[in-house]
Image 1 (tube, rainbow over the protein chains, first blue to last red):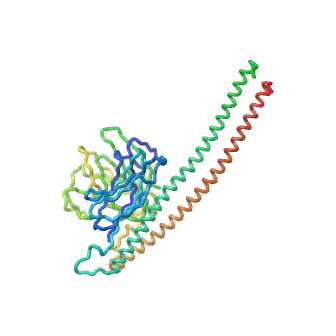
Image 2 (cartoon, each protein chain N blue to C red):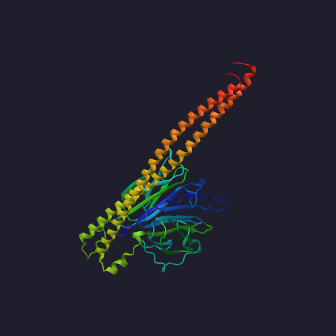
Image 3 (cartoon, chains in turn orange, blue):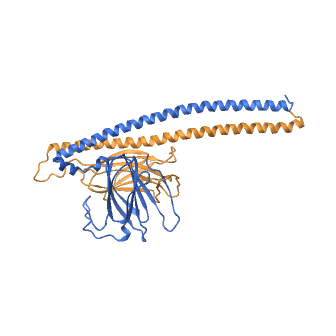
Length: 211
Length: 232
């Protein structure tokens, strides 16, 4: 009942973008990041989710989103999601083998994607050996385990979304202060300019006595 | 929580490229296989809670050996050339070095986390001309996934089914803890939003106040100015 799971954030970036923060290097020349995962039995259900969580430059409404593609070992595209900022997926694999999960970032900004992949296998569908009868309890336990894994998957999705939400909120908070201060400065500056202009206007026209 | 990234592109004959892979989920295991071109660095970091055991295992996949999934017998295959060796470093969130291995094909590490945060494992493939692309298989378990179930089963003499049920009990417990964590985070977020809301209200009033006061100052200043100039 080995159900390998992956959870990772993949940074999908393009060169020539500078994000000035500490700790990790993060650029890739090509804008595709792929992860391989081996599916042991055909008929397994691969489920998971991905969320784009760290973008310094917040997405306008015209951001194309992230594309996600799953390629089977035969080269066929099994599942594909285009242009989203995070989604859940679930599909049944047609054959066993090494599957490729790819994220593609068409835009020029660095994106961090957190994803979780779970390959679910129900005992009792394939590996019945000749000399043992499959204990129905084992089948039930395996089903229970798969249900638990789906709960974990959902939790991870919520966690990643919460993270992104928090990031947005914190950035909003900072920007509120910044914009307010900017607004005050502009206001004060403009009124100062007004006064200076009027002074200058009247200092000349008094001499000419015109108004 | 997770690391932030910066791009560093060196304009030399090699382009050093790094990709950071970050793992967010604390408990489930990570079994990754990714490509690492020569001269590149890829980093994986995982959010590990305090006092949790983490076990990691990495190896370069030898393309000549077709291995059965998950089982690589290192004694059988011929050693890879120097171009196929990687350097691995594991660091704690505060920058302390936990594990370092230079020019190896495979290795393992394990540690008990002393602090809560992102632990990062970086893989570095040395430069080689012509550039080769290595496939690295990386397995990182932390928290309850790192628990050695075969030992527990042997110690308590549990059979297969009991081990599975115990594993599930642990899983459910961790799900429960995660729920509490999520609840806490949601509460924090609500507080944050409320405070941002009140902050915006204050700033709006302040803005109104500044506007009126600036207008008042303008009028007062111009009035005194004109009185001085004997125009009023």
